[in-house]
Amino acid sequence: MVKLYKPKYWDKKISFFSILLLPVSLLVIFYIYLKKRLTKELNFKIPIICVGNIYIGGTGKTPISILLAKELSKIGKKPVILRKFYKSHKDEYNLIKSKLRNLVISNKRVEGLKNIEKCDYNIAILDDGLQDYKIKKNLKIVCFNGNQLIGNGLVLPSGPLRETLSSLKKTEIVIINGNKNEDFEKKILKFNNKLEIFYSFYKPINLEEFKNKNLLAIAGIGNPENFFQLIEKNNLQISKKIIFPDHYEFSKAEIQTIINEAEKNNYKIIMTEKDFFKIKNYKLEKISYLKVSLEIDKKEKLIKRINSLYD
Image (cartoon, rainbow, N blue to C red; front, side):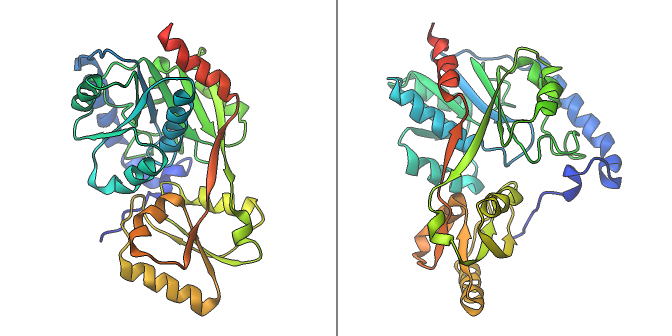
């Protein structure tokens, strides 16, 4: 399998490659502009929340979507998460299914929403889909990761952004995973001073399992360094890191090779929950994953804001 990694220059302020590719990025920006202008939005009978991102990958959209669905269920709503089908995203589909039942996967989001309208659901959460301009969204939530934020600030392929930050003008909520960042808040509020900004963070649950161990940490996610930082921030010792591309499909042989290395060096293997779901059918007992819960500061305020869609 070909391994495609995120270019390192995306997260640098300026580089030769980002400048070289700038003409292509300008064409992408123009294409997006035309697409927005020429695409007619479709309205649906139920409220639609879109949890999306501008920085491509690794911003925590799926955990936020799961949390919102659970919290809305607690207050009597009947939410459903809608995902567009991508063959390489089976890991995320399986992760969502393990957390809740209400998941619809469709080749086309519009068709998926039409089918959802025929069911008993009364609110749809688009996990991704911010750049699907055919769908009228009642609430747009844009997720950022506190470590990468906007990278070098340039649009693909010069940088990691799917579109320019001007798209925040039509966004209601921003959720930043990480520590409070007033400088970044000021930056994005220049595009929309009505933005409501929330912060999220991951709280590890099973740290005791990994204490006083030499860890072999594996990550096949959008921003693997964030996973490694979470481990080290909680006073765990990483002896070796192995990075795979986002949505990477591990072979059983690859996993066995990693297990052999761990046994040889007396490492304990730790990986993300999303990666673990890719290999759980192998029935390999010598691999563990870091269990985390996602917390949102001022969560009640966020849910109240979503609930106001029914007013």
